Amino acid sequence: MSESVLARAKREFLSGTGFNSPAQAISSGLKTVDDWSRCLDRCRDEAADLKHPPQPLKKTPFRSKNTRS
Image (cartoon, rainbow, N blue to C red):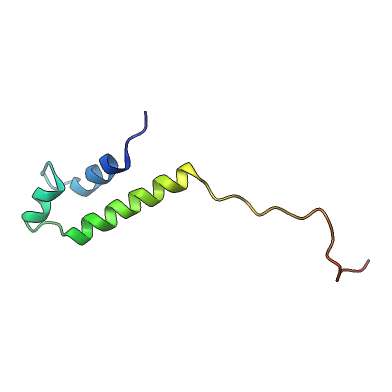
């Protein structure tokens, strides 16, 4: 089972802080709300990329009208 986006963001945000919640780390002054927001956005974006990887460009099976052989 994969880890939720929120759980992953929380784990990464609190890594090395000794706190149990983002609110504790923010209220202590060790981290900021902007730090939490960036961490959450990054984890959300990475999860979306894993769920829907970018599709490779498809080559067209025909030549353009400008190409002459």
